[in-house]
Image 1: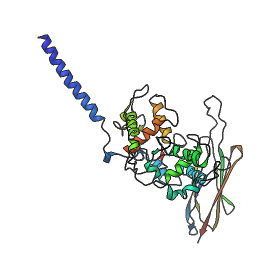
Image 2: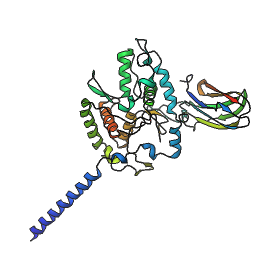
Image 3: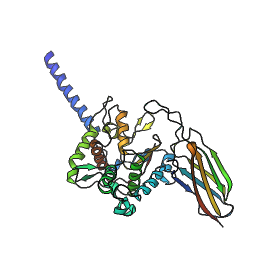
Image 4: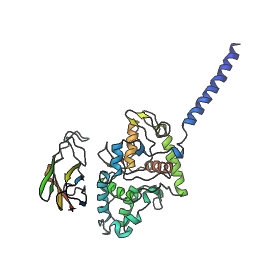
Length: 266
Length: 109
C-alpha cells in the first residue's frame, strides 16, 4: 500500500517536473520578430533627444575625428583610407549593417574594428590601433555612421554559420558567480527592472555608442565585458574570437532592425 | 588632445533683426575631475575646461565658469537677440593651457 502510493507520488512528481521543464523551455523562447525593440525605446525622453540631434550627440565628436583619420595618410604605404576606398559616404554605406564578415586570410570572422586594423596592417603598412583607443573608435564610428537608417543585414555566408552557432551557445551559457546567461536577462526578462534600470533586449543597433555612464564612446566589446563583469564572470581578452561570435549571433538576432550608429545610451 | 578638441556649434545662418535665437555648442573634453585614482592607486590630476566665453561681433554676450562636476564633452546652450550680421565666436579655456576656438556667421535682415 505504502509502496503503491509512493509510486503514485513519483508519477505525479515526474509529471510536475515535466511541466516545470516545459514552462522553463517556453519562457526561454527567442523574442518574436515583431516584439523586438531597440534599447532606444527604453531610454528617457532626454537621452532620446540627445541621440536624435547630431549636434547634441557627443559621439558625433568622435565621428569628426574619424573623418579626419579617414583622410589622413598613415604607415609605410603613405596611403589614407580614402586613397583606396574613396568617399566613405559611398564606399562604406551598409558595411556596419552586414558585419562581422569572414576574413579569408585568417579564416575567421572579423568585426569592423578588426577589419580596420587588418587594413592598416596589410594595406597601409601601419601599426594597428589599440582596442578602445580613441582612434579606433573614431574610425569605427565614422564607418558605422554610413549605415545609419539601414536595416541590419547579416550576410548569407555559410562559413559564418558555425561561428554564429557558437555565439548563440555563448549567449545561452550560464557564466560567472551569479550563474546567469545573456538570454536569462535579455530574452526572458527584458522590459523588467534590474535595480533602477529597464532590462533591454540587447540588440547591437547603435554601436559604437556614447554611453553616459562611461562618459565616452565605446564598442560592443566593451559593453559585453560590462555584462560579464556584472555577473562576476571573467571577461575574455580584448579581441577574443568569442566576442566576434557573440556579435555575429546578436546581429543575426537583430536582423532587419534599423541601424542607429552612433547611438547614445544611459 | 588639448590642441585638437573637436567642437560642434549651431547658430542659425539667417535671422530677422530682433529675433530671439538659440545658440548651441558642444566640445570634446574628458573633464577629468581630479578626485579619481587610476588602477595603481595614483590620483588622476584634474583636467577640466574652466571657462567658456561667447562674443557677438567682439562683444561678450555669454560666459560660463565650469567646475569639476560637469560631465565630459560639455554642451552649453543659450538664447540671444539677433542684432546685426556678423560673427558669433566661442572660446573655451581650461587646465594645462587648454584653449579651443570656434565661430559661425549669421546674417541678420
